[in-house]
Length: 520
Image: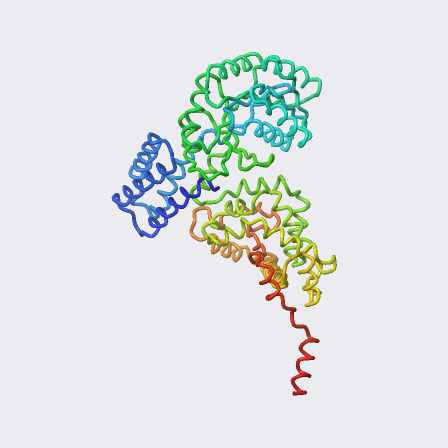
């Protein structure tokens, strides 16, 4: 996650140096806690929390005789992980994200300042709950302060096929909210999500309006939407709202941004209000449930396999996954399957975000590889190349000779070299899948685990610890390894393409060349 990348890199550097020691002294521990303190302060974490955090690490490490243990470095990392989980709200881990009413509809009220992404989050939350089985969510436009808010919510509702209750300007928000409940019952809505007004800053009028709506409507959940990019201001806003309105949870938006992330680390401990969801992108499906342990794992470079599995289950059916797995293990995987797989994976979100969830892989990828993966144009070129092939060519890439490669390159707006690179990468991937299938069919589970352990390195929770359930994701057959995606080279200028796009030598060309040579 980009927001925590700087902090994650700092902590990884600190712990890599710690793992290099055979033993750890008390002086080493003090040095580590000092550096962790500095890293957290630079990440804009509240200084009181940082002090408490590092004191707890030192006390636990010394009190449990960690330094005398067999692997003190790993134990210290484990203590840091536990403290991070606690700071992020570890006690909430097993709690449901939404407290539903005994009889529908469940009423959820979203509050917050202007610019926090509240109206968009209303639609995101409705879509998330519909995916979880609440088939009839409804939205209510009670933001009469911002002129475009009602229209924006109506457009989002139309886009997602979710009904929206709205009234003309001039009506009081509390009356709109009350009338919407009767409308929601007529619609047989299971969940009603109310979008309330915001302001540029916290003021008495805003708080009074929200209080009145809350008292009259009695929502099951009152969720504050806060912008993670605003740093410690987000913490102060949350404290101000919680003092006036009985908040039941928080939604952190813009968690995919490049801010330092201190608000997300501080807000739970400073307000005593649980974070329930986090926005990780602009699209309406970019809202994830918040789990303290998963975020702590990502910050410490341990990946986030469970979220990866959740995303796979949301976008890929069990039947599709099983069919793909069988093809992979039998080495029957062709370019048509690969195109389907690529599209399924792209539905799950940016590929780089997913690769960062695989333990140890983020550390293995050099910056240039990350830039290549993050470039969506690469995947569009791959798709264009495959779509420029005939159905027979996709199913049997061995048919693709020199003239066919030139035709495919011309049809996809690429050059022959890029087509060659894709085919070469695909053959390598096929070979790797064939080897893995042979290992699994031969009962070589131990060899498979050793292979994954080598890929995962010495990171805690490395690839060797991936659950076998990852077989439910295409390209992760039972063992949890993902085939390398072919990555065409960066686009070149047209002049360079014409120079490099030479036809591939065929048998006919070779025969003609020999005849010409004999003639000489």
